[in-house]
Length: 294
Length: 121
Image (cartoon, rainbow over all chains, first blue to last red; front, side, top):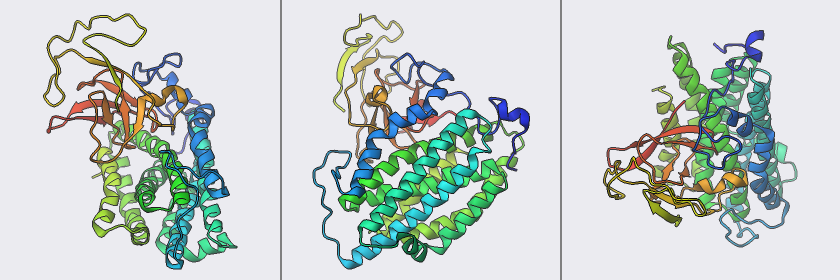
């Protein structure tokens, strides 16, 4: 079901991972809504675009965990986290450890998908996503270390939620099987949706340093989410058999409970009220509805 | 955002010659369906959004949640929850591009009269 690419598809624009046409400006124009030109895809999926898009929040995120100029995107002042009680630190460590597991999973998943992508632009995009995930993992590990943990790797392993570890195994097995669509769905729709939503909820109650880190990660998740939904949306649109939709529904039924269980554990630790925690899945459910998978 | 409105029914970008938009006669209002009224045009200001390269940043802004009232030239991306901004007042059928998540969208009118964006895969 992974539609492993043939040799021909590897060099064809319509191969697995092909971005398809997009709306957008001609590279020489300055209005992104003006034109409908596939040439834009070369730009938005490129390393050059990525570098210009992430530069500012990358610097903020790294400085937030290296001790200088932790300043959130909205310009709020201050670079010293408020005092955290030992209990709050313990909760935060568990949350950060599970964020790190999620990022490690996405790092392994995105890098594994590079070789399967049939289009050089998609390979390039997934390479930038791989670097995003590596950076996210690094800032979470640095944040864990900054909270007084001498061995972050051991702490992550100790605090990782079993359901999230099972999700990781399942996702990486889809990647290893060459099941492009299922792996992309699991990673760039299911995992990224839930991460983005949880990070967005967490940032509202987070200490300043953690908030700056989360702001940068959320910005990257937008690209990852959009890439996954749009790639799968085009595949589902073009699949007259309904086979892909059935396969993704099957993946969803397997993975949704694992993600829900993982993030239930996080929600209570980041101070979300039960009603607010229930809303965490709204964005994901909306994406699934847009894709016609309900 | 408080972008400057540069004209009604004209392409009034600052520094550019204005030209009448002959397809849109009539008045305008924010809440009523006024899809035959003249378009309003806006000069977009920077919003602090920095998740795309600098030349595109003024076309997007961060969404401030459900209480964030959108201007007539704005619509929310349903995929990534960034506010997409246009130089012109948006109408149903307009196509916009969400560069932060690379989604192509078409503007539609919701049952409550507001404008929404739907993804075009």
